[in-house]
Image (cartoon, rainbow, N blue to C red; front, side):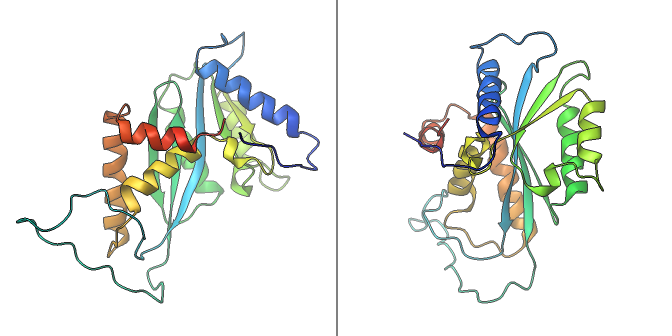
Amino acid sequence: MKTYKASTDPDFEPKKNRVLELYAIAEGITQPGHDEPQVVICVDEFGPLNLQPHPGRQWASRGGGGERPRRRRRATYTRPHGVRHMFGAYDLARDRLYGHVKARKGRAQFLEFCRYLRLLYPPEVRIALVLDNFSPHLSTRTDPRVGEWARNNNLELAYVPFYASWLNRIEAQFTALRYFALDGTDHPTHAAQASMIRRYIGWRNRHADDRRLREIVDRANVA
């Protein structure tokens, strides 16, 4: 049973309860009231994505028996190619995962990804985004773009409490992504790694009831 870490955040309980209310709406346990979101999407960043050997068991079939043997994983000591970041979103009602790989994960890139999510539904459908307190997700005095965009586009931003990022249900989806798409791999380029991630997301959305996938997600889910 997951326990809540003590927090000095005075809004810990209200934030936690609001996120749980949204999950109840997404699962059909609670009917959304007037002005309540009809769609709940969990959002977060996955990464950084390095070009390095990843330990673990690879999802692909084993070499031998007429198959081309796997190339041995190389040792790496430098990161000359930089890193990438994946903006991910998990639509609870549709049980679909979305992901865009970017070179940066600033506020501009976050808003670009949010605009894509907004286009998945008609403008009159109210959407709630569940997300953590990473600075590009927030509005500030000097940069209020996130809050202004949400108000102008019929969205609610529901932030999980500090020390409770695990409450965001996309984290379990990231666990499965790491297992199926990255464990046991050694991609030579960012393009190859991003291609593998896109292939996994396509497979995952076509096989959302796959037994292995469900077992990994169920073990990782904590809320």
